[in-house]
Image (cartoon, rainbow, N blue to C red; front, top):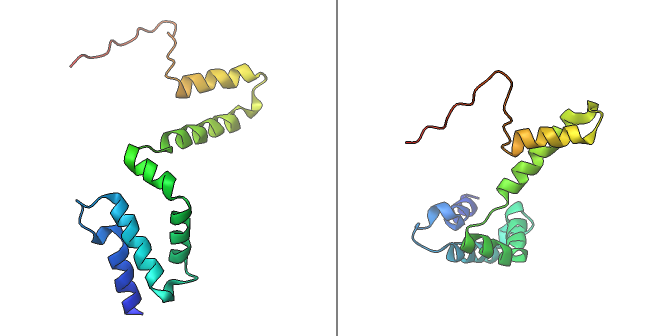
Length: 120
């Protein structure tokens, strides 16, 4: 069993020099997993299968440095606002809440002055 851990540790990106491209890291990881028969049926083998299936999308994300994390975060926050707005009488109130929270809309409040942004 120590041999499995040693091979798995070697196959992970942490054990690879940082100047190698990410594509080579994926290739090495997939090769390590496919050549070691004790990993068949494990979670690591399933991960390698999923990486092979989604390889074009993974390479596109690595090449173009894109992620959908910001979109997922915004969707989660909008769902939270929807739960908060269950007691509202009109959907326009939910839209106004979303604009205030996510849209950066800052209406002038009565009796208050807006601070000027500092230019530095």
